[in-house]
Image (cartoon, rainbow, N blue to C red; front, top):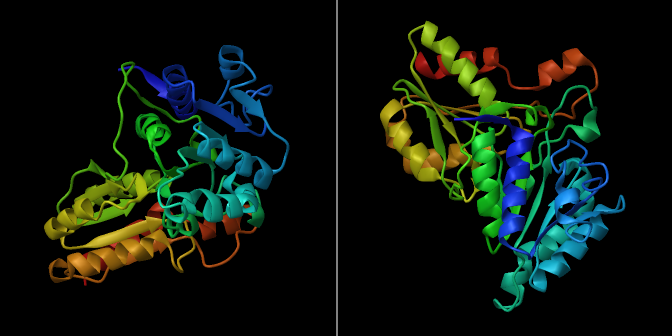
Length: 325
């Protein structure tokens, strides 16, 4: 199977859906003339023209509102935020607009649209450009939240998101856009709401998503050297959350460690922990442990960035903590 980059997988998903459905269009800062801040939309302006690949002013609240209005009138916008840190300015349109339209109109209006872009740490970018906001948006009824970890999942899930009749939050990572992965040339879709077991194991379950999956898989390799078999689950979709796949894994391994770049308080890891203790408490041989980002703003210094983030060493330590209780 061919290998392509993460950004290319996203581009293929958008382009294929735009060829399939004239109602789909892309808008955002620098998506057209500049080919995208991360070159995700490279070449799309040349193919689809400025009517369907539209540059916007630096006004997230404004163009998010335009997209919501377009979706209410039959279009299917894809909105690219240069970073989800900037999208905080658009939360009014996302949370009070898109997420609530169907409920507040008794089904008369819907907002079939995708808000996408990168989030989380991407090196020394400082506190205001390094935030993981998955938990904030996943807490909102009416939104679906997706955060893939590889090119194959990114393409299949983005195509499903574009076809969905609800607003979908699609959260990427700046440091994954150049990642290579196997992606079929033929069309495929990945259902929203289904986690994926990336590595089978018997002794402990490790759950994560987005770029922290790299930490999870690397930790599993290190643990294997010490005779510990880790099953690694990629959530892929945060809301709806695939509780069944996690519960079935924990019933087999009897232990769980959750890796989440988010702040620990009200994190996705917290929700995963609750769901496992609710549905699989009697199968647990040790308390669930979380490996999260630090409960602080991320500072600029390289050593503080390293101290802030989950690491292979922190995950290995947590796994040993649940193994030897």
